[in-house]
Amino acid sequence: MEQANALFSNYLAVILATIVGFFLVVSALVGSRLLAPFSKEREKGTTYECGMLPIRRASTNVGVRFYLYAILFVIFDVEAVFIFPWALSFLAIGPQAYWLMVAFIAILGLGLGYAWKKGALQWH
Image (cartoon, rainbow, N blue to C red; front, side, top):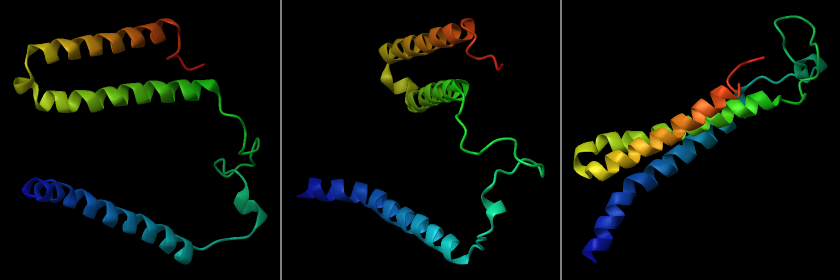
């Protein structure tokens, strides 16, 4: 029973933060819907391009390059998520974890080198 209480007390802050966060998001969405001015004019729905007339519709297809940059960003963002806790516990985890992280970074470096060689990082 004592272990169950200890487990619950560890997750109490997480549950409380989740409830408060949910309440804040819902109240912000409802507040913006109730308080924000809305216009039903036709021009309100057009694309804004620095005061000029729109060149094309806003619902055009997005180029593959944007997706490629997004995927590369996510890959290296995930790398940062893995490296941060590793760096915090660096002294306690031992040399095997160090070499595993070196291999992880080397694999990502090889992937970045491959993308660079193929010209995926150049904007045309």
